[in-house]
Every structure is written in structure tokens, then in C-alpha cells.
Length: 232
Image (cartoon, rainbow, N blue to C red):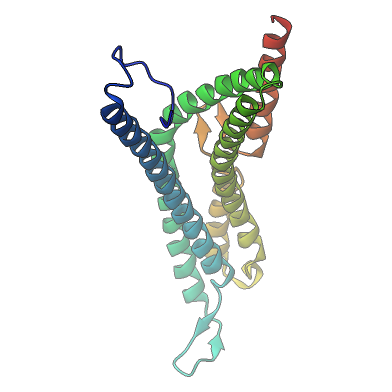
């Protein structure tokens, strides 16, 4: 009683209850701390990436506007050309940043999402088989909600990257490209070609983190759950 999870240390629990309790508490706190640290780092990188896209979009939509010392807005072709060149550099750096994130996270996400998929199927099966025991049912129900929130959270961040990268194409179209010189318009075409295909974070280079993937994980876990139910 009082332990956060059942353990078997091959010793008498009543005799060594205090050391066992301290050990399990330290393990539980360390596990929660590591999960929180990884999630915070992941969110920080995603928000930084979305911020890069947002600043890029603002610069593109206002590439033809320049304020002088009096605060008046004047239009200059040279300023628009230099702004578009700057936007191309920032867009390239943002794509490189996402590529680095992709190389860092695609394999861990593949292992993590695969593990969560198996856990969802098993926990769902345990919920159905423990409907008469309300304590076990609530325990498994709470654990399943935590798994669903975790999967949705990770796919939500991936969807933010997709949406932010897609909006760059719209910002290029909304800029005053029709008033720009031909050389500047050609540079805009380069940005439009590279931003037409949205950037993504993938799960093992197989599936993109998005709402669609979240829906696919739920459907797959439901299928495995029904398979376990039929084998019961």
C-alpha cells in the first residue's frame, strides 16, 4: 500500500518498505521530469520554427513598403529586391532547421508512436475486461486518456509546422508582386516553388505528424483492440 506502482524486489516489502517507497517515488518523479523536459524542448523548437515562418510571412507581405525617418510609407523597387533576397535566405535557413529536427526526431517518434499504439490496444482491452472492477476500470481509463493526449499533442505540433509552411505560399501571393520589377518577381517565383509543398516532421520517414496521422493511430489501435477481443 502507498506505492505508486506494483513492484517485486525479491525481498520482504514490509521489512524494507521505506527504502522501496523512496526508490519508487524517485523513479516516478524522474520519469515525469524527463517526459516533461522532452515535451517542453519539443514545443520550444516547434514554436521557434513557427515564429520563423511568421516573421518570414510578415516580411514578404510588406516587402514593398519602406518607412522613412518621418514615418511616411514610400515605395522603392530597390528595397523590395533586398527584402525578397533576405526572405529567401531566411526561408532557406528555416527549411534547414526543420531538416535538422526531422533527422533528430523521426526515429524516436517511430519508436514512441509504435509503443503507444500497442499500449492503446492493450489498455483498451483491459478496460473492457475490467468493467466489473470499478477501480481497475478507472485506472485503465485514466491511463488511456493520458496516452491519447500524448499522441494528440505530438501530432498537433507537427500540424502547426505544416500549416505555417503552407501559409508562406499565400503570403507570397498576397504581396504587391505586380508593382515589383521583373528581377524581384523571379525571386518570388523561387519562394513559391519551394513553399508549394509543405514541410513536415515525420514518423520514421513514413508518416507525417498531423491530424490525419492521429486519426490513423486511433483507427489502428481500435483494430488491434478488436483483434484482442475476438481472441479472448
